[in-house]
Length: 174
Image 1 (tube, rainbow, N blue to C red):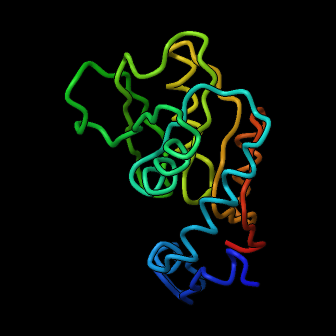
Image 2: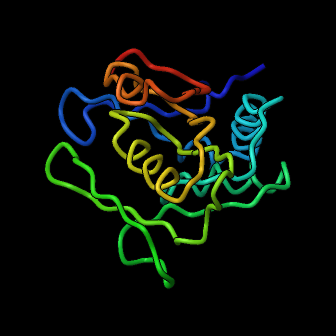
């Protein structure tokens, strides 16, 4: 029986020499791989009390939406700046080379709601840290951060150490 890891394509030296790129498109382009990935992520939420799934643009949408649908939970989009039409809260965070800003609608998370943040991959943890801060600014509580892939060598868990972080597949390298 295949595992999620069997569906993840590894591309050496992309986007630069020395990087082993873990490609999720090979997972979502295969019906069995996609189903297995979503099912494995859902299993990690079993028994967890939460109200909302929030996903980071764009692959957090790919994995978060089917989880929200399957569990009959609302889905909140965490988007790049300037993409949401209503009043937003925003957070700027550091990237390897520069900064990025993400936003959420001000009414997307209600005070006291328990939120699961979803994305395809955890590397340094910067995006999810910023997303968690937005949820908390709106009065929500992040009860779990769920990823399909973890690049453990980039130490994202360290930045997110105050949260419950889980990943279906973990790679030691970067």
